[in-house]
Image 1 (cartoon, rainbow, N blue to C red):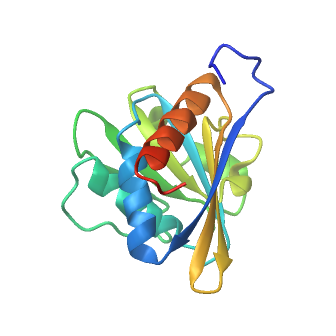
Image 2: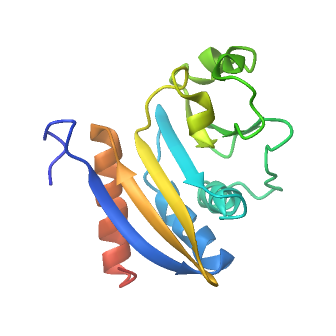
Length: 170
């Protein structure tokens, strides 16, 4: 699938991850292909491992410090390398319009990558996703769906899929 296909065509990859370590490893793999500007939606129930995946992405970008859930602060910004990664958790957002008070316009200035947990809470205000990642509980494992929604998102999904296949993880 090439990135020149119409935007209605999306690339989707599914995999089963056994434990938090596997989720972090997937995040590290994904990190190798991230560059701004990029919008990533992280979807899943409470406790699905969205912040665990974010921790893996940050580790893959070289961040060595703590990675905390932005459940109460709503936004945590990290600068692990050449660009900022903004991790948003919109679970406690009352209305999508509150994103303006969080400085969404500044966060979306094109110089960073945004990881957004609970993106449906920002519907109508939040920019469209380039990449959508869905995490679902599967007993002791997690089912993860990676969906490239924009041209750049599809390119990332293709690269991650190829990397996982070369490691025989798919």
